[in-house]
Image (cartoon, rainbow, N blue to C red; front, side, top):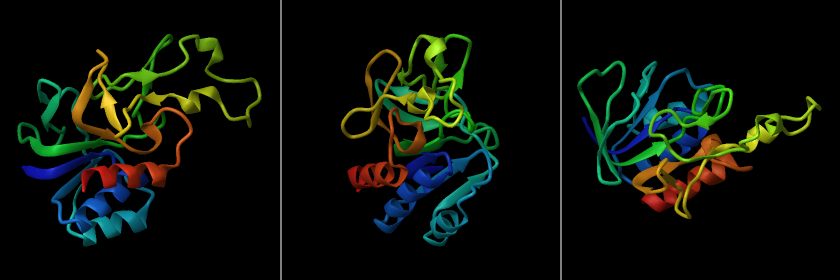
Length: 184
């Protein structure tokens, strides 16, 4: 299936980007593993003509040509690819498994994007439960257009990140609108 943009993750950031792209005339699909708690953005996305694939997940890897992602595959669609000019990585952080941890590292599981995190695990959190925790700032590294860096340090030409998956303290809506503006 061919789209202008594939959004990976159906949370607030991904759906804000999706609605903006749909309003600009793009053909957009959002693939989301879980149910979105953001009913209003989801309903608006669908009402604007967006394809919404709940209960599905993008498989790791995808097909690349140099530093350009050509297509991804999902668990439910099997061998039917989702092809697009652009891909938005909006999978959240730890709770939604947009980032995964081991005892000594943090990684992005779909495309092995470069992740900024504290390498000393003893500094991942503080003893004060209600304080902002250092791990909350972990996330994928992006360039000035929000294109992701791949693990080898190269920039993915057409894979953008929006929302909580970004490193640092971010405004979800602001990051989504920024990505949307770059793609219109």
